[in-house]
Length: 173
Image (cartoon, rainbow, N blue to C red; front, side):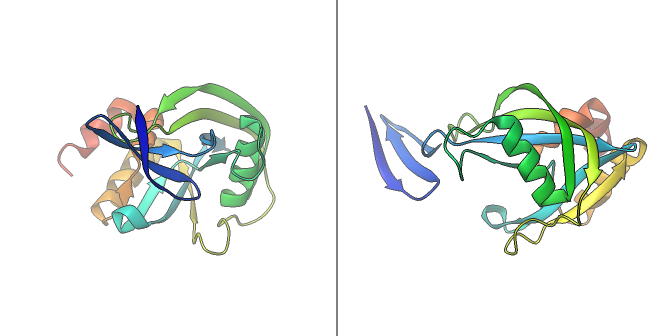
């Protein structure tokens, strides 16, 4: 039997036996977007309050937080354009993943966005302060290592696109 210890707009703290975890409210999930434009991977960097520093990430956003029943592809298109200023013609669902299954029930769908058109500067909503980075694929590992050395946190979801090359590059960083 689970017990809601605290509930906010998007999250609940839940206790189930001796286990405590955070749960997304109302079936809200997330879309994480892999988007490459003319050989550059589109990344975002923004302040993340829980870790008290900026974080380098793939563009992402909540699915169904504004409209119940929102399709993952529609949310991905909306979030990509809002955060980065790129509109995707096509969105391909690559699979569902768990963010941190020992701590949260949150899941996300990894998507690939293609047929990109620049519609604006991006940057997210006024309170988000999102920096957009267009990083040549061949320079991606070097860019991430430099950001990490500068004190920027690196979202683990970047491993989906960086793979073994990054693991070796970060080992001594």
